[in-house]
Amino acid sequence: MSVRSFVVGLLLAASGAAATHAGAAPGDGALQPPTGKPRRPVGIEALTVRPGPAPFTKEDVGAYVKAHNVPANLAPAAQVQVVALEFLTVAELTRRIPGDSTGFKDGDLIGLATLSGVLVFRGPQGTTPAEFSQGYVVFDAGTGNLLMVGTLAP
Image 1 (cartoon, rainbow, N blue to C red):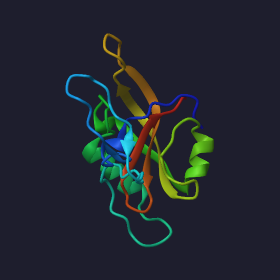
Image 2: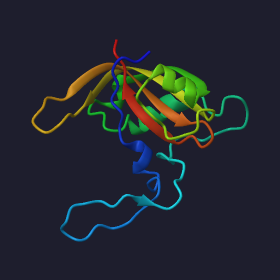
Image 3: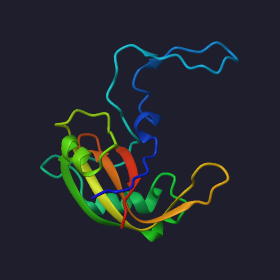
Image 4: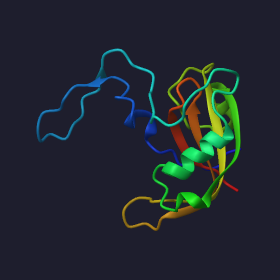
């Protein structure tokens, strides 16, 4: 499914980090390794979860994308459509999109929504933004929180 992917730093950005970071001495620029017990990533609050086998729908994902866009996407949200939504385990997601990690256990359930349209992301300073026509968003099936964003090769 994926040959090329771009993952936005959502896993730790809204998770309170995986653990508590000890502070670095002012001015030395070094970060200390995390301490404490690692926690499951939280992601960004996004969808309302309902009881049952499908905690949210393709239409729910579409409404979220239209209202909030895809994080870091420079193109208008109106240019992005949700093509499909499926619920699968993290292990299955890892087989389909190698190299991208949710930070969850292999058996945990996620919602993978594939996207089409215009997705434009900035690269390093001094480079031209990259445009893609296919992408994906991954949601925690238990909380509805957005965990990952990526692009797919056509």
